[in-house]
Image 1 (cartoon, rainbow, N blue to C red):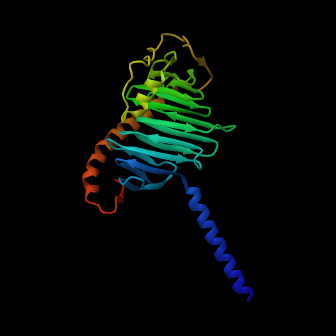
Image 2 (image 1 turned 45 degrees about the horizontal axis):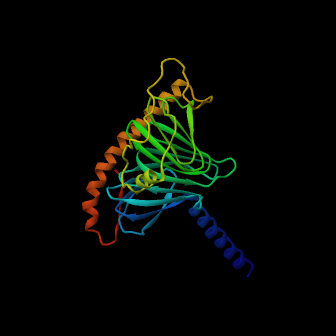
Image 3 (image 1 turned 45 degrees about the vertical axis):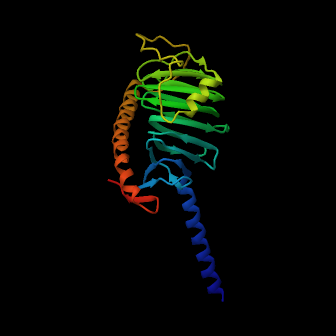
Length: 276
């Protein structure tokens, strides 16, 4: 009798451990609202094309959206959410309770991050670094240019090549920067223009957001604040890494168009295959 109880207890502990491990592996849930989203994680590619379809995503997942697509990504028990627009590429490089880094080489996404003490939430595009203190903001990554609109709270913006020079962007304000320049002085954006930006499916440079300043000669600061940071070698390595990711996502954007035709014939709405 005692041996049987010990066996049952052992089985229960194994099941609980396995269940908790599964929960720990997933850092969030992705839901497609319309269009198609491709997720690459752990050597498997999953295609979501049915509205309302969901998928658990793990740290390191790479997410690519097709044309005319909208989706939502919830992280850390919905403490952070990302509205994904069309033709967007995201890499969940690091996602933890205290520190998250989203690599976002191209596309458009709206982020909502709940303020928590000690939280370090960062977004890296091919041209910029966005620091978050607990806020809601829209990012458009347009090749060599990144535009940021703050809807609530405060974010900081710096170029990838000059991370020590940043500007703070408050509520209802927007700024932009280029890969090697410094961020533009934030300007106020009307509610009407904000709504237009939020409603457009794809990233599009907005003329009412000033362009980032070209790289200054010497050590001149922008209207933002300077802080201690990476060495020049680390900055160059970071920029090269982001450019490699940009090249990779361009290949994925082309690949997902081929996946569209393949998935149209699928009755399940989800295609799972080994990643190349």
